[in-house]
Image (cartoon, rainbow, N blue to C red; front, side, top):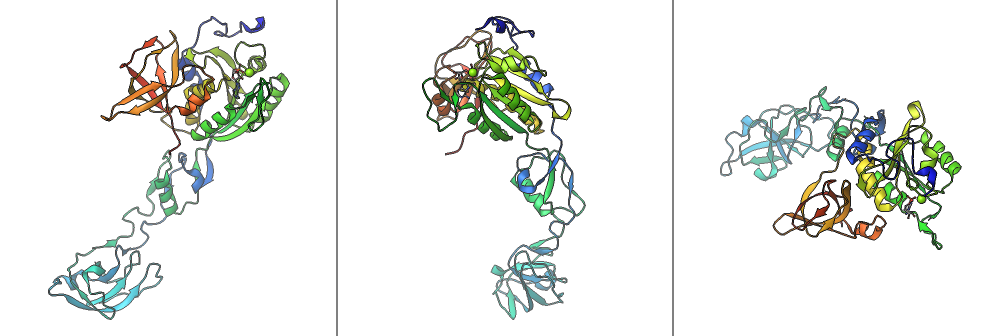
Amino acid sequence: MSDDKVTHPDHGSAADGPMDSVDEHLARVLESIGVLAPISRPLLEAQGLLLAENVFAEVNLPGFDNSAMDGYAVRAVDVRAATADDPVELSVVGDIAAGARSISGMGPHLAMRIMTGAPMPSGADAVVPIESTDGGMAKVQIRASAQSGQYVRRAGEDLQAGALALAVGAPLGPQQIALLAAVGKRDVHVLPRPRVGIISTGNELVEVGQTPGFGQVTDVNSFLLAAAASDAGAEVYRVGIVPDDHDRLIDTLEGLVRRVDIIITTGGVSMGAYDVVKEALGGIGSVRFTRVAMQPGMPQGYGHLGEGEHETPIFCLPGNPVSSIVSFEAFVRPAIRKLLGKRNLHRASVQAIALERMDSPAGKRQYRRGLLHREADGSLSVEPIGGAGSHLIAALAASNCLIVIDEAVTEVVPGSRLTVIPQLLAQR
Ligand code: AMP
Ligand code: MG
């Protein structure tokens, strides 16, 4: 630890100075984040985003009266007396398929063969399904009576032309995309995916696929955080590795700041001699380096780089992979969701019974990797996996949740209740 890094002009940087709570740090992050300006996107690229315009139907849904069944278009009055034992016979005067463009009208005591989705002929007001007939081609025996309107899908019964189809703020899932397609929207205004640029700092880092030499470490964080950011709804630029070099870091950041909506760096924020992120950014922009009362993830940097419309939030996360993902979950994911316009910024947590004893540092919120189980009676239980070490990547990969141990708790005994955040997992 070099002397000049022991203290920092801002509070909380000294090794034993005051710490911000997780909630305070998160509040500071979120209050500085707005939503992005809406953009137009092709329909399929809008999936998962929030609608930024009111969309009105320009057409009726359905667009015309049509048949809900394969059968015969009839006048209900003509078949009022029809039964299986005493059918009514009608002359079949036409055949209407789905997609038929012009059809003639239909007079009394006549029928037309009609397919599902085909337009109703004028004069007919009901459809008798083929199962209730003899299926005749020239003449048809109708074996059941019909109510007026039976098996007819009315024009506009789903949505009237001019009506609001979807309102500003609607989340666009497959169902809403279906409706937008139905009303003819090829492009929609949405709140865009935030573009997130991710930089791993460290002289020891080598690109994945290269064999690390002695003392070298494969860059894990840019992959971990790229996957996590994309999972959170961001568009990701994995910048990759930048060495612990002041000028290289500043150059990289300057190139990035206009192109993304959030910058994430990892490494170089603690008390070491080569903690270049802290050294390089401590003096510029509004980036502040603090200690947050959490484990892992205590050293955190947050602020903005650039100016005006290019002012970009930057998160400087600690370098250990587990620290970086815990920090991401605690601070960056909610920020990405806020930029997306989402109302729910946080993952839903559940309560589970601790299966093992755990220690936790006093005054810090501890995040442990865990395995969440559902017991035969439906209750949830959780066991820690891999210890508290923030370098344990295999244990991270084997976990399916984060266990959250409150600041005030120093010991968790088996059988006690814990807050657990299930992580999004790829499905088997
Ligand atoms: P630092 O915060 O830079 O002091 O890094 C803390 C620890 O995390 C060191 O053991 C680093 O080698 C490791 N580390 C930093 N960045 C990465 C990364 N991108 N991938 C994997 N390990 C890393
Ligand atoms: Mg480092």
